[in-house]
Image (cartoon, rainbow, N blue to C red; front, side, top):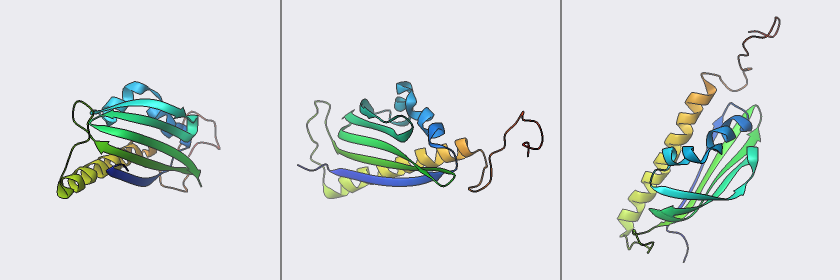
Amino acid sequence: MPPAIDIVDETFLAVPPSTVAAVFAAPGSWTHYWPDLVLRVYTDRGDRGLRWTVRGALTGTMEIWLEEVLDGTLLHYFLRATPVDPLGNPLRLRPAQLRREADRRARAAKAIALGLKLQLEDGRAPGVAPVVENLPPPFVK
């Protein structure tokens, strides 16, 4: 049976992939972003992202793919999963309930990405060199 929820999202961040990868490197950070999910890494691609199996409120897979694009990172997010009960059995949700759950998960994913964008870019616009402090002239802006 195919997953009941299939979410794909992309957000550009004007920071290098290594900066974004560092956010997700510590397993303790995962519960901050996805408190109702238990994640287990099945592919660690370093600065290119992570792939997880998902348990908890959902059963399936999730991926963060970090693609270097121009002067930043295109953060790709994929979630393919099915809502389950506490015993791991698929929930029988009505179509409207399933759409609401998928929409909630999609909005949460975008909120994570936009929050990271705001935090990590620290006001830097794409195409503008990052401010580098403590460098001698002429490198300081």
